[in-house]
Amino acid sequence: WESGLLKLPWGTSNAYEFMPSVIASRPRVEIGGEDMRDACTLIMTDPDAPSPGDPYLREHLHWMVTDIPGTAGIVSFGKEIVLYETPKPVAGIHRYAFILFKQRGRQTERQPASRDCFNTRRFSGDNGSDLPVAAVYFDAQRETAARKR
View 1: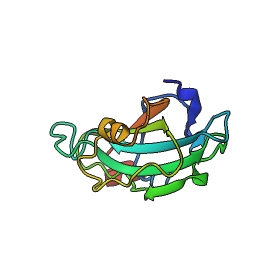
View 2: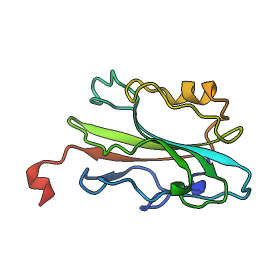
View 3: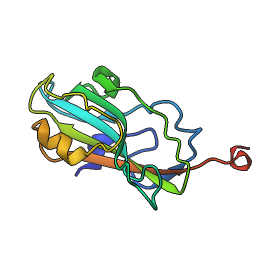
View 4: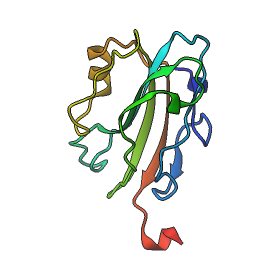
């Protein structure tokens, strides 16, 4: 995976920790590509839902954008088929993963039935996507009143 293909506002490194108030609105995601004919899908999931100790909802889908042109640079040029949902962890430290797939063609990705119990691997296989081409993640935990100050 080449994390350089997927750039979030805080860079291409993994394991930054953010407070939910900082990530309340969808991030500006940039994608590096070389061919306008390529199309990509971006998925954001929480594999630790509802808590890292008991992640029975894993994965929870927070965002999905499809048909992102290979040279668009910014995800907003794609089709948002699952609207951005702000991370709101209630227990423990959660990982939030951004995974980028190259699509086999445009308008080929189907909207999942549910945000809960989403399975990135199954979704990729069902939609004919290859292995991920890039991934990056960050951590977040519940924000107490004292930590907001």
